[in-house]
Image (cartoon, rainbow, N blue to C red; front, side):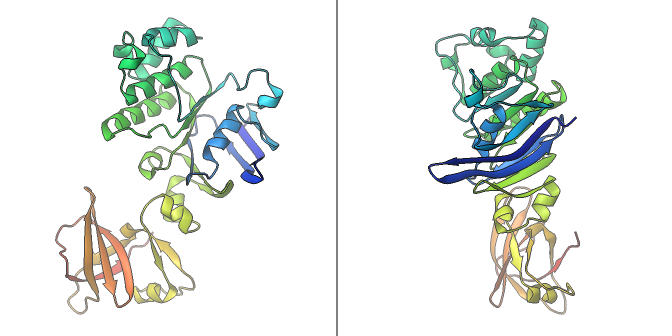
Length: 317
């Protein structure tokens, strides 16, 4: 049985299409990411899946059961599907343990395991107005998890978190799947947050699915510039430029990531000049020029300087 089946979901508001015939399936424990620019329909899709937003047509089926929208349900939402919005709130002036106690649907032992996974054991005696943004986020997730869901929907969970807090939350989300055996769908706009975590990525634009596949395919073989731009730097190589680099039978433009190039010095000929250098910690990106052609290439070597003459080639994928 398919764990989650989203079929032909359509939603309009104010004569605008928010979601247009969205369909996909998710297996249990499969880590799914929904990516796209602001306004592409990501949050609306999560709310439809959670039963919090009524679609105009189509249906969401969880483990063979139809997920009802607000128009068909007295209390909006599905008890087995938890949704963490970007604007989550915690009750003010209460201790953390009180906030969690009111929501608890499981045994103390199971709750303790969730608190450990969410890294909040040491926060239980604090009041909610004494917490950092990252601590509040982890407590909000714990509050959802102790309601015992099977599917957790996370809407931009890393927004406004610094690198340290983001790193902690990434470990928490990873452990939710591995240790608590809860299936997750995450919305995020940052490729660093999604590529390493996801098993499958769905890319939305203007309410439409433009590409779906495993992270490696989405990153290295984007269907268009929109998808390419969501996940990092890229170059467009014309057929003529591909032939210049030794690629035979080139017939159309291709999208190429900077790391798909090898950059080196050649005794016979060095056509490209280094115009700009950017340092990203684990690599450098060099902006090279040859006549009117500008291209970005990545390298781990620090031997290249502005004005150097170099040669490049394409690395076979």
